Image (cartoon, rainbow, N blue to C red; front, side, top):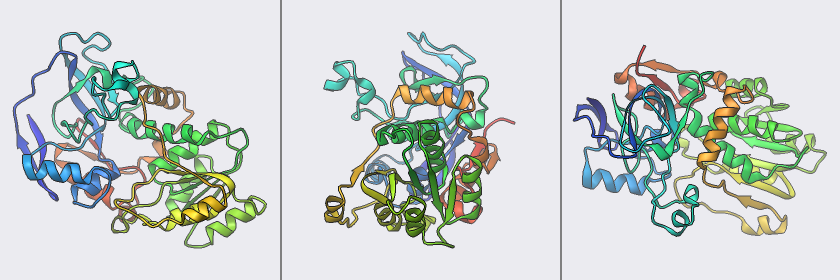
Length: 363
């Protein structure tokens, strides 16, 4: 089969490799639609972010290796011994983080919270290939009302569900979301159906602000044309928001906001409010802890997304409560288009992309 393999940062090649054997408890799938996450697109270029050191070590010691491809929709073509919940022909998506099976959480039947196990696309091959193997325990069946393209977004959406759950939104809470890329737009919609009152979003791209309004924001502020913190305070009666999501920070090389939006998010939250850190910054940053303490701000980070979160995303999208189609702006065709999808995703602002660029493997 053909599979994309990395020989180093910035060096991916389409190779012929053997079709993997299907172990007990695993399935062989044919990827239908795959998208690189923003994190994967940065790592492919060697830009420090989540899992950079892990990927660097693997490239130095194991290259060429299959990397990335944990956001996908695939069809099962073969099942291994012991697989009972899925059959050939089922469309599936998957949770990226797998349980290790041996830690105290796994041994106490809380394996959905395990962080010691491998990660699809990082520790074992993902789906940037003609065929791939996946463990049954990671899978979720895709509802017939969900397209292949939408299903490729479910893993990211499950992380957004976990982020909003962590926020503990109360009925009528005012919510601000900095950054209206895919996860920011997902957090917007999930916050809305979770009881949020006033919802204000912030971005620097007019196309992102437009889609944000379409998907339910009461106000979509373009930070290039207004002072977002001052405007947020004005819209909340001078208080600031009850809950603020920071989804815009990260490498300025890829058009992200660096740490500027984190400082703005702190200023936009009311005293006693909550700040939810969704972004990855790629390294240490300076933080005014005294300001957090003085204003009794709670800086929270999303819980790990579980199988239950992933299953919930299927219900949300199938029922139309969360809309993904408006965020999918770039769809490429064929396995050979994978490098282009990485380039578009790493530079979404240049290409006016919202969601990562998707690759359809079959017409």
